[in-house]
Amino acid sequence: MRPEDLADGVKAILNRSPAFPGRSLIVDIIANPKAGGFKRRRFAARRKTELQQIVTLASSLPKREKEVQVHLHLTERCGHASAIAQRVIERSTANGQDSIHLIMTAGGDGTSLETAERLLHLPDNQKDRFALLRLPMGTGNDGSEGRDLVVALGRFLGALKFERRAAVQVLPAAEGGKAPLWAFNIASIGFDAYVADKTNRLKSVFPGDSYKFWVNMAMMFYDRAYNVIPMLLKVWGPDGKPIHESRKERLFVAMGASGNRQYGSNKRILPGGENVVSCSQASLLRRLLVKASIESGKHEGVREIEHFDASRIELEYEERIPLQCDGEAEELARCDFPLVMERMPDLYNVIVPA
Image (cartoon, rainbow, N blue to C red; front, side):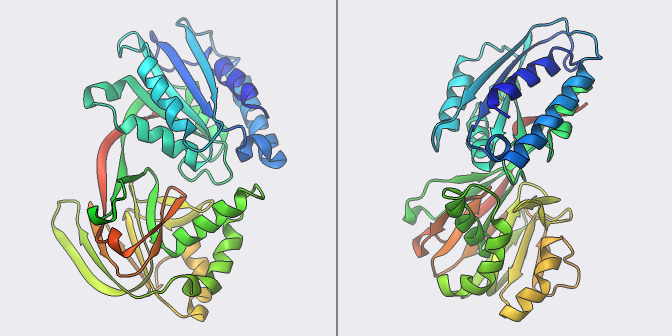
């Protein structure tokens, strides 16, 4: 499937959509033409079938009275989605009264991350002019609004509304000179960030989903690549009060914008309402024994796992360690600690069933 096919299908659906009656719809699709949903034959065929299914269902609905505009933008490099989103926002004619402006991403987690970052920087009185819909056109799609196009675009067959969502702000220590980072799904340090980095590096050479392969490889090699030493973890609850503090060797620590989240192609790392998980270091044999339970979200009885419902965590560490935000990885040095991760509520709008 080509990005142009997606844009044509979206317009056909929206021309019949009962969502936001009495309002014009302006839609900008920011698509990565190299994403798995366009380039990998199996994924592309599946997405094309799903798109046609929704187009067929929409064709039986009455034609929409108000105008629908659909604009397609193709990314060409890393960071291009951010530039496109900024240009779209600056040139938007939506005034919050006569029209609704929807920005759709059609790519992987990187495309979604760059676009969402542009929306959260809007002044509060401008946020309700825009809403985001992340289409599952990558190979992982952990941060998208639905894992297939039937779910993502099928919502336009009914009434919709805007809903504000939270994000995780990641603040390295000022001494290290790194800028604040954002995660709209999950931010984490340690083992899984190492896996994300290796997955991304392999994907740049051999497109596809190699996350599972690198999880297995990291089981053996992570300890050789990075020294695992005691890490201080401080946790503040939803009311802003301290609820936990401990120092121990940790394999990874992750914080989500909410609970009930997954990454690594549907690995349920936050299976419940709690939005923070910490996994203590364990022997190779022990890690192999509990790997399947952790990936499937069956954390009960895994003694290395701790969960917290948190508004903020602070981490202190005296070694280099990998960090990932929505699958985009980099390395932290000692000077980047203490590291703060904080859940920031009500930052941007997504589209949800009314």
